[in-house]
Length: 187
Image (cartoon, rainbow, N blue to C red):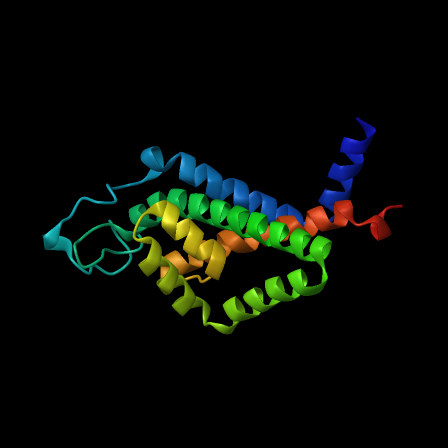
């Protein structure tokens, strides 16, 4: 139990990591409770209430089909978390395997892997993501692969802010995990 306490104490010292953990838990809770806390259906259209500004009945307003933007963001948090998690996992696995193989083989094998990475990095990430989607076709699993390979986020104002907060909170947690695992910081 002593090691777990040391880990938690080290993590708690990093206030940014704690803020990231709290934000991540809130976003996860919102995603889980979407059917309960969403004020409106995210797909139900109301053509009489198109382009309503934020406020009143619709806190973030409505879109061109009269759908409540807040409800759509709440429901989209589920997909965003799934895509974000599996994209990073996919990128981590592919990158780790490539790095291990390059390090183990060395020489010409390392050179080939590094040139392949250089070629991939030479493309603008959005173009690379679109090419991957065009080759693989549509679908959530293909989107995960495209983002995992290209790491190309697409943003609009409010949904982009929600994605930004989610990614930022995970990065903050990563800072805390780094503090826990860095041997130079161990006392």
